[in-house]
Length: 118
Image 1 (cartoon, helix red, strand yellow):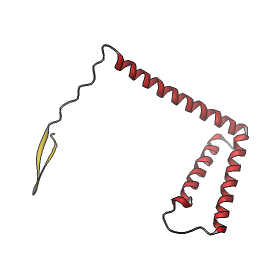
Image 2 (cartoon, one colour; image 1 turned 30 degrees about the vertical axis):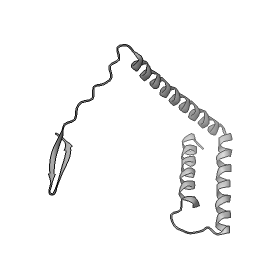
Image 3 (cartoon, helix red, strand yellow; image 1 turned 30 degrees about the horizontal axis):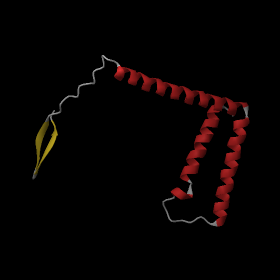
């Protein structure tokens, strides 16, 4: 199983679990004990399949790739926040000037409303 198939499988599993979750069901249908048992069994089987996949070399590579991606994203976010703070702390920093918005009156029949002027 390639990493893309594993990712697609995990995504499909998550979507299926959310959509078929009895807590999110909009109707008032109560699951029978048999339905609940089948639901729990199917979740356990899918969890085991995902766990088994994670033990394969492809699964391990996917975990490393995701971890690296998440770590890089976090580092990028922190760097961007740090750059913004440094920019604002600079003695040459001038906050952006907000343009004044002029409002115009518009007649809506019985009502007069204010809208931004073109």
